[in-house]
Structure formats: C-alpha cells, structure tokens
Length: 320
Image (cartoon, rainbow, N blue to C red; front, side):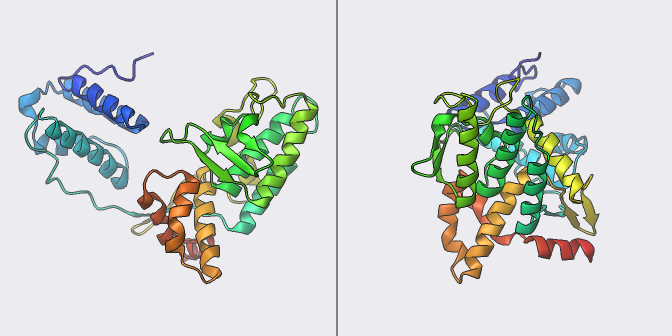
C-alpha cells in the first residue's frame, strides 16, 4: 500500500512538512493528503519544476478536476492555504493562487429530516433488529449508534469508539474521546437517548459485556462496529420509509443533497435551533453551547445552521 506521505515532486518535502505542522495542531487531513497526491502527480506528469509555478499552472490544474464547482473551490482553497504557509516560513515569495477567482457555485441545500421523519426512521431500524441470539446484540448496537446520531448530533465515527466506561449513567452523560479535532468532550444525554442507552447497557450486562474497557456498541463476531454496518442498516431503513434518494437533485442554480447518516447530525442542529426559536429565545445566543456540544472546532461551523432550511421549507423548494 502506498504511504500517504509518499510524494515525488519537488513540492514533496513541503507537503510532508505542512501536514506534520497541521497534525501537531490536531488536524486530521485526509482531504489534504488526497489533493496533494493529485497535485503531486500532476506536477510529475507535466515535468513541472519550481520555476514553472504560476497562476496559469493552477488554472490548468483546476481544469483537470472532474467535480462540482464548490468542491473545486475547496481544493483550490487548500492549495492557497498551503502556499500561504510556505510564505510564512519563507519557502516562497508570493502566492500564485492569490488572485485566481473562485468558480461560480450552485447553492447546496443539504437534506434535513423533520422530527417526525427521524422518529419514523428509528422505529423502522428498531423493527429490523433480528431476535436471534447470533444477531440481536449486533443489530441493537447498530440501532443505538444511529439513535445517538439522531438524538445527540454525533459524528458517525464517535459512537463506534465508545467504551462502557464512557457512559456515566449516574450523571446521564457520555464522554467522547478522540473527536475529529482530537478534543475530548462530555455531553449531557437527552432523556430519550438516556433511556435507550440505559436499556442497551442492561442488555450488555446480560451478555457479560459490561466491563469498563468493553465496547459500548458491539458486533458479536468482530467485537466492534464499523461504519459500513451503519450505512447498510441506515439505507435499508431509508428505502423502506420512502426517503431513499439515489443522487442529488439539481434545479437551476440549486443542488439538493441526498440523505446520509451525517444528515442526522445536521438535522439535530437545525431542529435544536428551531425549537429554541419556537420558545421565543435567541438561536444566535445558543450557538456557543451548541458548538461545544457538537464538538465544532470553530464557532462559524455551527453558525451555518442558522441559515439552513428546515425539512418543510426544503421540501417545498424541491417540489416547486
């Protein structure tokens, strides 16, 4: 298997140094690594050297990218930040991407579940649990993972890493380690999640799997769940309730995203802010607490949910 940091162009050492610098700040840079491999390969295939670096080179590279405008702009933004870093450490003078304008983007409208749709989805997944001894705990754990995405707005990887010791039933909290930005956080559990997790823990205890270092969510053959377990069950249930969408819907300058497990995290934020507004309180003032709860590194990452459409508004635009 190729090493993720195996670059061959003249920029190879700089790519490695930049990724190590970001790693030291707790960043996980899979997108950066993939892009740097793309750009590294482009430089080699065209025999480019340091003296060839120019805005035209990057415009030509941009033209080779077979993806949507918003994704291309993100990739160019990553390269722009990389050259800003080189400037700061005096490895280069100027930024060749500084004056390259972004491509016009379609407005992306993510999929948002209504609370009724979430309840219907969870009920369907719960109904898919096999009652056989060899499958019951695995299926129950998959259900509980998806329920935590819905009730607590967790990232898909976070429930999969939970250990029994992370569940503090007396405090009604979950301790989440090694998040996206390698920052731990302690979250209070909503009553619904607490009740279901308590029941789940009792099942674990009946299987003798309640030691502190045991996985909280269990695969009976593998020992722990992986993301493909979640995707398989999620999309099967989504199809059963009529919400499975094979691809994005494009209308004019708008692109409507399909549902993924991450949509549950998005819906958690949007519906939480909607409920706060319905109670006559300020969603804006609630953002710092919501950002901390969801484990966002930057306040701005949570603020985007203020502009997100709820399920009814989104559906009306799709049907228009």
